[in-house]
Length: 578
Image (cartoon, rainbow, N blue to C red; front, side, top):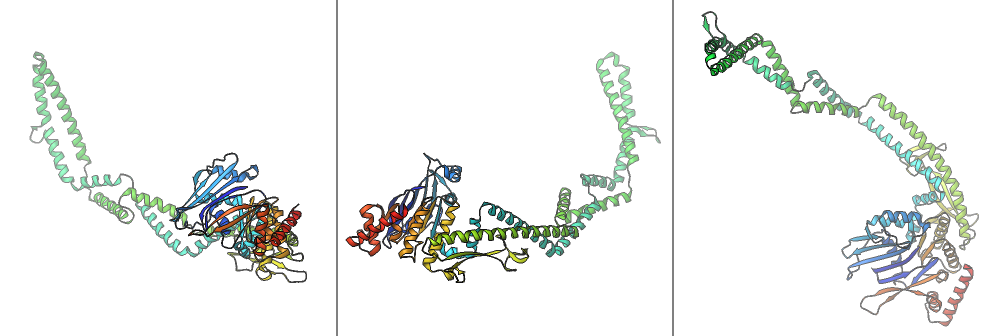
């Protein structure tokens, strides 16, 4: 329940606090006093579009204090999730708008995104005004109203249909993509396969490039290497043709010379040992040089093979990447992309089969949805028509017509209940609320068959029916009694009082017949004594309330006859409420 609403610097209201009670609260006042600012304030408090604060004020501020009992469990949980601190079961909400248009929101004393206020508003309050009546004339809104009335099982069926519908759309889009872009994808796939075939044919190996470069350098300088190795080998081993000794002979002779007298001095023995080791190393080097000379090749064919291999690698670098790791990465990515570009007949056939299954499933769910809507439409029509009888429209009947949407007027055509229908995410049905004003008359669309006053009563009857199945605990009506007077106005007041038995109801009204049924009566009055016109809000009861009703009845709050008439109206309303 909304216990208190405070509004600062909104429209003509400088600072007003509205104390609110359970039951029916009516808000009245002169034209231009700012009655609708109360509704605007509630809209702002619950995430509505913000306008700038009035000139001369730093900011506009709206604050609301809610009593959040156990019955409002979902509202409590969402507020706590947003970080709200619920003191003694009370939830404080606030919204401010600066003169520059910047907006801030608070939930339970903590700063919060404005979107959180909107989410809480959906759980806490429902606002209805003349604009809502206009919205109810739209087919989409009428379908949504019927779906809301149909109940939880219908909602689950609608969710299942929407899931199937979106899956069908995704499958159809993928199938269309494959069909329409098959040529481009096939061309890309061919290019990728050519590249992969080329890389596979070359078969580059990690580290191969350095090995090839080393081998090519050796083959290119084979003669010079052979001469160097042979000269070194000869210097070590000597020349057998001339008998000239080499380094091994010289070192051996030196070692033997030292060994002859090594027993006389340990130093010589050490030198002899080192020379013997040097001789062994020289002999080993001579063997290795001989083996190197045997293995050294100057095969021009092998060198040509290396040149060709290096050229093949460079071709890959020029086409696909600047080095071998890049080429290998390109090949890996190309293989993955080929998997994505699978345009084989098998993939198309698979999607076509899947599309057929999803089409059948969506059509079946759309058929169930239509049957569920038609069953709900009968209950809805009966319930709303019954409420209209208590709103001075005893012979009127509201008919909720559920018809197949014509083929071609949806995203896709489905066979629903043996009829080809255009389907969208909301089903394959057209829903229209019709009004039959009296027996024998043909039902007509609301915007054609209902006057302003009748439309107001139809809207109220629908809201009463919705209230029977749950909904937000706070209902706000902004002049939904427009175009109504006389006995019909009294019936609207009685209907609102009945609605207030289960909900907290706030009504902005210009009809004294409606205001007479209020449990609490608030009057918005303007003060023109200063340079700027401002408005305030006060609670009226007893004599003050009778004077306000007299003002509303005849514009004469001080008329004894007018006050007497108002008191009679209050007494009659009290009898009807009891």
